[in-house]
Image 1 (cartoon, rainbow, N blue to C red):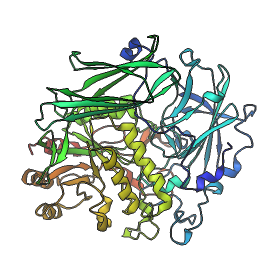
Image 2: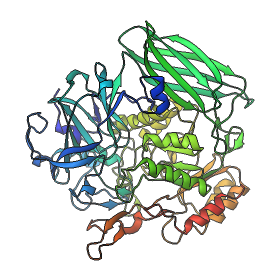
Image 3: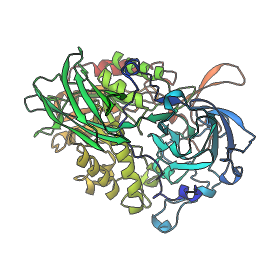
Image 4: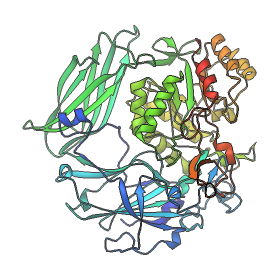
Length: 625
């Protein structure tokens, strides 16, 4: 198969040769490796790569993917943002698309563009990063099937290995994996990755943020032993007595030989609760096992059980160890329209959190994440919305371990297709009810679910942000309900198109609804009320929190909300005049059009220094509800 540039223009092409999404479990070659959290089945490709920047698709060099191609190359760090390496314009914008007022575009399948595709493959505003890396296979990967995983790439990427086209992927914020096995060599492998800033996926990723591009999360090689756990679905349920529960498992294996596996479960004190041996097959299920006493997971007591799956050959050789921590908890809506967690009213003291580092943009570190969790704990924040895309894989584990409730949001925002200059005007809204866009958005829902389905911290699947409403988003809601009875769905944008209210979202959700409006709704509520964004934290703000908190104390149907937002999006740069390090916001980089300091609306500055508003948050979130 040959790579085709026209895929950039076609919303129905969003993955080519990409391995289907699966659970985010880690595999190890031995028990000792699993205990140490470093796997010989993983080889990192992070570090220095050769790099070519092309301002437009037409300016790319010919045959750049060929092993014999000699450049000339620059050098870039992976992961990083291309714009922050000084190759392209830094640009912050809120609701508009970056090309508004410069290039006329309409989404494929809408309005006067109902038959035409977009023009990204030839566009003057579509910059390209060409990455090249030569590698030898590490010892632990030799003789095994090997795939490559890109944890985050904005916005569309093509992959070649040793001159062979491997695959194509969109969806910037979820992992993309490809099988490299047919083209691998023990040494001297030449990997080439081409990343385009724009594709038809750009219509779906109109988030309020700096518009970057490139390989901004880690890249790694993953080896699969002869028998491999491809997907793991952990199904813990809590019985009606909220004392006992059941545990079931569904596994998908890839196998080149016969074998077996063992399943072990321990509690937090390492007491063995379950041991079973199962024969390997393409699909393996552990029938529900009753636990007479289960320790429930919640924000005050994030109790986790430890699952270990060991995979053996028929001769008894250990091939793979898969550990995973999980929790028992139960979320539901009672007859009074109150959200209940473990038979107690759920209270969300939440924030929206962009992934952000003042020096590296959306390329964040583990230290950043640990610091954010510590800030949550210090300030009575118990919940986070992953606005407006899936986060780094490690963030979900940290929320499990620290009892942070999660609203796990799809990578979807199409704000500029339905709101123009502040007016609701959905004449070319996507995805809307446009069939052409349905496969792409359903794929994003599927990927979000399949990747993160085992995390007890996730209480809500959020269908996306500010994308109006129509049949396509209703289909996403139905997908989650068909595949997951252990969580609720959320989507705020249905208030713009209330004809879909019965088909979209288990909860009523309004952004920035004043307290009087909240109370008016609560007096006749037929769904729980949850504010996915409130208390917009720009300038000297959040002083009105008390009015909302008093309503939470009065109405149990009010579950709380998520402050917009946690951290400023600003960049720490060296001022050319003073030589001092200073924060720069939207519009400070000669970026036009821009939404200027609108990127600075966190309760923390971009360097993770708390603003005075944090004191108000800590006080009100600490009050009894």
